Image 1 (cartoon, rainbow, N blue to C red):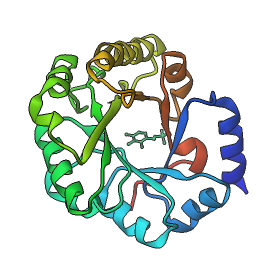
Image 2: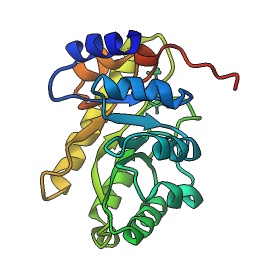
Image 3: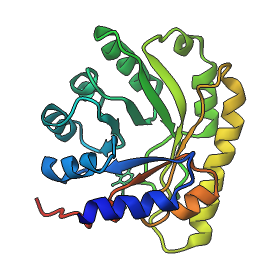
Length: 222
Ligand SMILES: *Cc1c(COP(=O)(O)O)cnc(C)c1O
């Protein structure tokens, strides 16, 4: 019941236009099923292998989002079902996703990961790099991917001013990129986790990725 209650509380705090990705990494399928039974349909995982195993055991209508760093040689395992890939940070990766999606006659939604954090360990591209990807003729020829927005992760810090300014940078980046896409498909700003989703929403987030506030703390010992 705890998970259902957590979901209800969380949903009541999210504006209607904000999509909730329930981050279920490290959690067993029974727990994910519990969230599914409470109505949740969008789940996020950060390891391809783990997502593939869970997908096979859970209902077909779950929208699986890959939110972690993606190795190109593993895209093929998730290509049959993955709905959205948040961590796209190169043209090379985009081309591999397109190639694998084509085999299943699918279109996979992609977010360009933008580096907004000051930590060297965080992945992502600059607004300039994202601009050149969106304007590239090569990319417009990729029919089995759709670039639907941007994703970013703020620095791991308790300094809310810094987090807020990083989120605002991502929103500005989105505003710069959006006019480069001719249809209305570029509409997602994926930012905000359990600790900072309120700040993220105040800064323009349209998609939050929340794990521990729904499922409790993760056990990383395994
Ligand atoms: C784990 C993870 C989250 C969720 O983190 P919580 O603090 O548990 O909400 C969000 N985004 C990414 C990329 C993650 O890896």
